[in-house]
Image 1: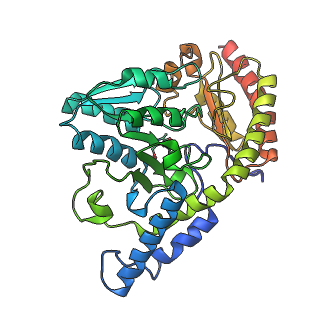
Image 2: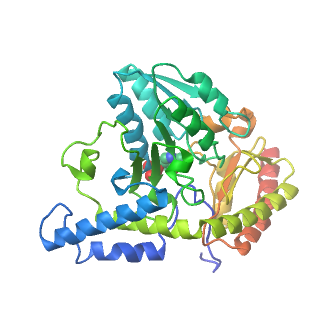
Image 3: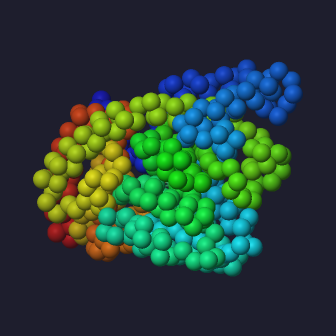
Length: 389
Ligand code: PLP
């Protein structure tokens, strides 16, 4: 920053910086190793090896077969492929899908399109005040024509971790494919697909220190899936398109790094987050935590303020060199309030004052101290200014 102070980035749920070791792993494929993995010559074979080695690395972390990994262009594509791909491949068996009301729009809008244009019916499960899906509600929503259950692993806006294993057990007992959007969970939670009992799992590289524009979809063997991108036979005919070799090498390296460090890093970030929460809430008594106290992502703090708009607060923080977010793209009074907060029954007067601080590997206690020194006086100033209008 101009005044010589360090910029503090606390928006890791939106995106993360690319890790230096990830950049290093990608570099050769931007340079001399530029071959197309489908080419037979040595340059092609070098690229092919890079893609297949990456696939093996990812499979090891997910506890699955390498052939069950599909590389995609982002988390949204992984969600779209999982939902639309399973829906279209199974439509002769039924047209009912179960999901939750707090999913990312990559899931919700795909469901809406299936309803509006393709004759599917989607049940959007309600959540409790912490944003949690009740597994009994999943069991209760199952019908003879249910062909897919999709519930996210952890929520991007409020950090709530869903009871995936319980839902997975129910899905399996009914022989219904179970998809989870694990985009926000990947950096911190266990991704073993057998333990989670999931059949499809979506990941996005830029949420765990790989670049934007690369994703993964795990597809359990035997899961019927219609490809959405048709063309070349890449990814065993599940996703056409020339491989993005550097980004695939990058996402595999990033997943390896977070897998190695997630336990220690999760503990460290939870401690920092708890310090931040405890001291901010003491200084701002009207702040209310959104999402659960315990079953939430490490390093994820979200809360609401009554009668204040997040936009002004975020601009004030930005001027002080602190990057945070509202937790949802819609902050302005003219926009719709967050569907996640509404589903959690947060009063409308608080929905526009939602703030989210999400920590990452470069954050330290000094960063937390800066937020604690900056935010309470900023809120006081904004309130006073509002009072004089
Ligand atoms: N799912 C969740 C829970 C997310 O938070 C995001 C991104 O914010 C996505 C899906 C979409 O991922 P991508 O940005 O890679 O398309």
